[in-house]
Length: 104
Length: 163
Image 1 (tube, rainbow over the protein chains, first blue to last red):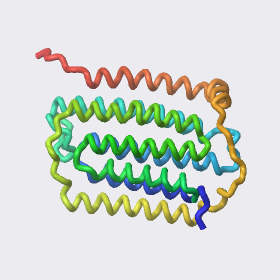
Image 2 (image 1 turned 30 degrees about the vertical axis):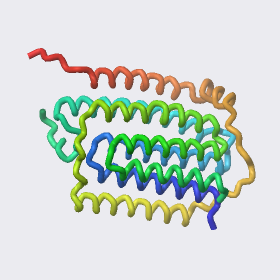
Image 3 (image 1 turned 180 degrees about the vertical axis):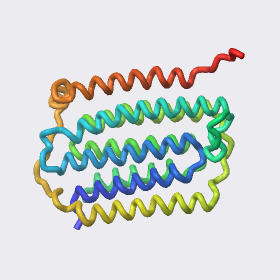
Image 4 (image 1 turned 90 degrees about the horizontal axis):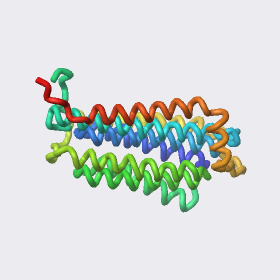
């Protein structure tokens, strides 16, 4: 029996697994960041689904958590892409297989 | 299982799959935009109008554009695919995580969910909650965004050739 909540939780789990698989298997650092964004979005979908079908929707906890989470994800994407730029300027590649040294 | 839910879920999942499997990076970024639009539709479907619109504004409008710019500013020859051992290990881990999550959902998710109420998240209520109960987290997020703004500029700035 699939309740509506279960449907949303399945979509979220699938999204998380796709993001994790991509982050672990792709070689471009930008795509690793994209995979992390997908995992964050899966968590956000869970928050909204539990807010909608949970016992106390009038408290708005899920909605506000997602708003803060989106703000933090945006900050993370900005800093992450700036780091990729800096690393690219130094190493001339964004291939995570070749970026294996901490020392320049 | 309504028709809009199925369509939006297929849109989100197909976009995510394409974003993680296509070979050209720009195509991946565009597929990511499709996935985020599908997710925004799912939020609207869940009665969270404000979050759905914020999702479109922030993710489709800002994050995807930022990723496109990062792709444009880095040269990327066709990277060869990951070695098959790494790929199998990564896909195995993600399949295992999905199996665990799906098991948890089917085993424990049915406690509530048939609620007949239609909760509303009016923008007025969200605003007053942000200004009253959640005012400290709001200030902290403002500080974090300022720090991220300055930090991103400092990190991406051209290094001075001092030596």
